[in-house]
Length: 135
Length: 429
Image (cartoon, rainbow over all chains, first blue to last red; front, side, top):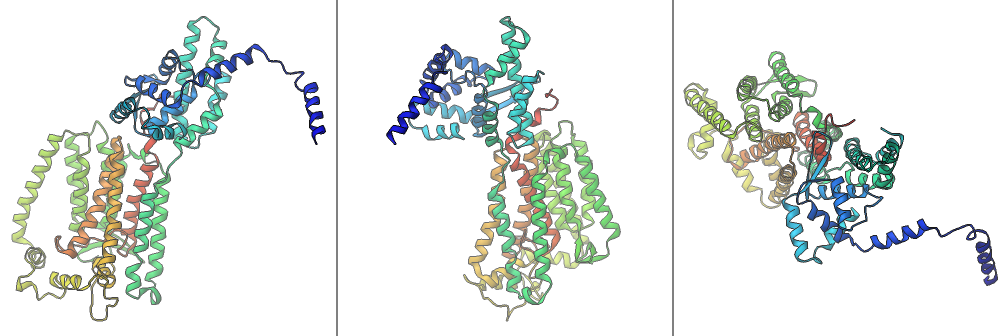
């Protein structure tokens, strides 16, 4: 058995990994993943809620989050709309459509109360946050 | 729209089951892509490259679509549905107690009525009620036509009421209530609806209802007056108009009192003063009802051997139910029926769309008036009328009326999170 596995490793080294090159773009994507992991779900949600105290569209929100150093939505901007729709369904956000087709989101009273609560005690509300992220 | 963008949006949409959600999700992502594209164009890259960048920045369309689908899945309000089924099943108990189950076609008819009611409610859940918002006039005309038809072509008179009988089917004025519910909700949600139109249309329709029973008129007036409160008309104006209306009716009532027939006066007087000796001579008066109701005890008599209750499966169903099964079961019945109303109010509270709120206000009122009216006349705080107990009283038309009300609730609940599409018209490319 041992011998057969060693053979497999040898064959893999010779056939598969010989063709695989660790390019610059691989390096870059790994670095980016490491960077992204530094923001927890809670931090992102708090950031979104803080930004939505004033009315904003999803597009405006993406660039503002990026300027705060949150890169989770880079190359994955659609995921932000998933979170926004979930927050709206939970009754934390209100939304309105403009004539030009833009949809604006804003934190409502319930959302402001929640934001205040999690800002004061960051560890107390993780359960409800998890719900929002996992749906 | 470029090929790439098209296929991106199509892949997102293909994951979403709800048609309404598909439309507004697509519109929102479309707008986002436009913004990103114009950002890159400003940076000075070519149109095609900007488009490509915008789409790739979005991420994986399938996983976005799947997550959004989970959020916008059409919902079934199981609470209302379970209460509805429970109430319909409780409706079989009065038949069981009166021995109608084995030797009579009553039980079969009842089963058919219940199934038809269920089909109506579930069918209405699938219909998008919002498409009816601008059809107020159509419903008003249909309701009026139905009332006119019934006043001209009735072939039976039950308790002084014109009824159109076709085999086992009985059509009465009550059947026009759903049409007027839809009509008023449609009128009141409009910004252009004026007070003078309301007064005119209300007087015309009330006159049509007056040809039937006072009970139906009462339900109609209670429904309309509740709904107008959620309308876009000025609150002060509404108060003035309704106040004047009540004053006129009161004046008419005082004049009418001099002219009404004795038996009508008698009903009111015996209600106001049930223990007056003059009214005790009647065959089945309030005192008799009171006696039966109190005599039932916690667990009921389980027999009707020594008592006769008229209309035991329609108007006096609550009395016969209590007498046979006892106060405990009667309390359970009342709790289930009240929970239906409370559930509807709870749903209405969380809505922010005028049309849905108007519909639910009307639904709650029509339902509650029947419930309070029927139970109230047994308990003794409401005059004797032919109000039926929702879901429990025997008869196809009452069951269909209440199934219609439940159908509206289910339809609204199913779409309550899709309200945003209301303002979306004309925004999609």
